[in-house]
Image (cartoon, rainbow, N blue to C red; front, side, top):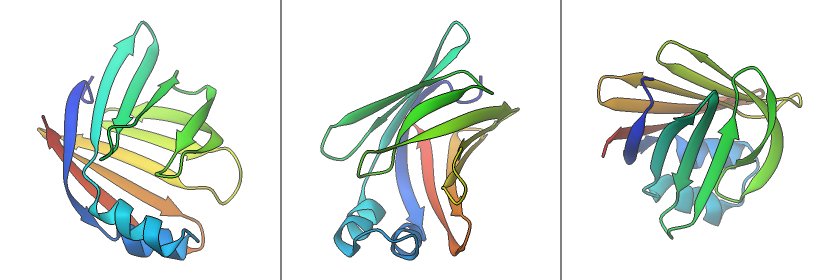
Length: 133
């Protein structure tokens, strides 16, 4: 699994602009842009486990089976949504079930992971770059 292990963010592009365009409060958008996050990926049988740790040390754990709907705690404000994950090679795509929700794509190339966030109606793409920790 290309995602296995621990990752830490080191650069962001368009995060604040994306969040503002998607309707997030300005203070949260600015904080999210500057945040250093950690991500850990493991696999428990056929269940993928993604643990995201924010700058204040709070951790959100996502457990999912590719192709099956699950409840995802999404974003810096901890909003929940129904989503489906798919994995194709070195790409993990998590898409909200409801129309117009954010699509998160994580792609691993060597020791770098790029997380991209898109949303219908928002022209800005947010990207967060992570390296293996």
